Length: 256
Image (cartoon, rainbow, N blue to C red; front, side):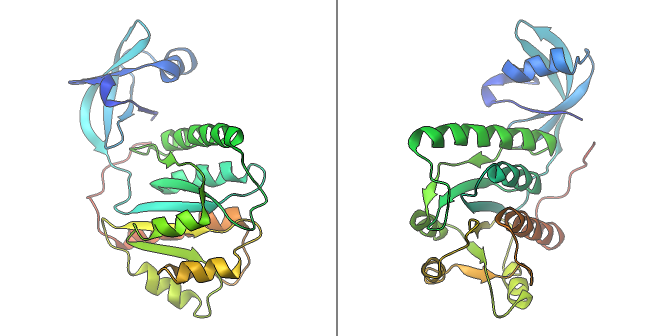
């Protein structure tokens, strides 16, 4: 079942008005017919809707079941990702959104090879946000996670103080036992930050600065992971723990 996003301005009573590129996709690419059903999300919930008509440059859909499904985690995960080379960030964003992250924050670190000027940063963020939107549609998310502006490592550590729990996958002498203990601290309604280093990894002083501010280190296993693998593994690990062990809203039915 297809999923589309609309703003509050495009919702009127029991009707949703789908415009712009999604309108073109519905009418000219998918060639939907009157009576076809799909999901419409507004950032909070997903409603089951039926296509009623095409009106000017809008697809008019009637809500036939409100709050049809909820696919959001009961914990807000913030992925702080050290800027990687090439198009790795696109893969990381796509998979992180599929896994349920709330927001993705690109971070400039000392060992980052990539350096973005103002012009490149704006175009990159626009591209990354588009990827987040596509991944949110594909994975039936209720909201489109935001890809924020690039921040410094120092700013990332400052923001860690605003979150309930902040972790860094890093060599840890306690191994997976410490990881299990840290995951056990996660509760419904919490905010969880995950900081992933770039290809060159963290500098020792970055780790010291993080742990000195209450950030907890965890292990992702005995093997050395690439930055994109570490990001996907860390988010996936947290997502599975939350889905299996953290009580949130009652599961809603999901239709493919």
